[in-house]
Length: 147
Image (cartoon, rainbow, N blue to C red; front, side, top):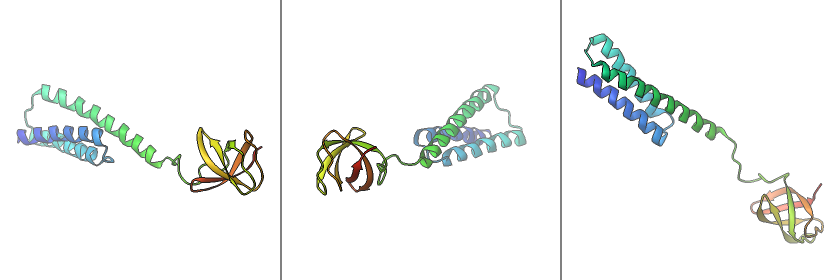
């Protein structure tokens, strides 16, 4: 019986360490917690004599690993819920600098956040002017003279 309980405790620690490494969304950490608690309940029910040094090492180790797993799960959840900072229509409303003159209905080049983009406008925009992005269609921006 003692070997089974020791196996549960060691395997629960291994599962929790694996959770820290690969972040499975908490499944491995939860399994480790259940195994550890099961082992502790079995220890008290069966009154198995376990060396105190074994418990004095495994319990703090498990608590530290569990705390790390919880922190990683929380950080992963927050990152998952965070709005993407790139993608379609993300540039609308931003200001840009005209790098190449844009004639009415023709393509020019603007700089947005250090990146060069092709742009079109319904008005002539001279090189160096500040423009405002009013629409984004794939890799082409529609701009107007900025404020």
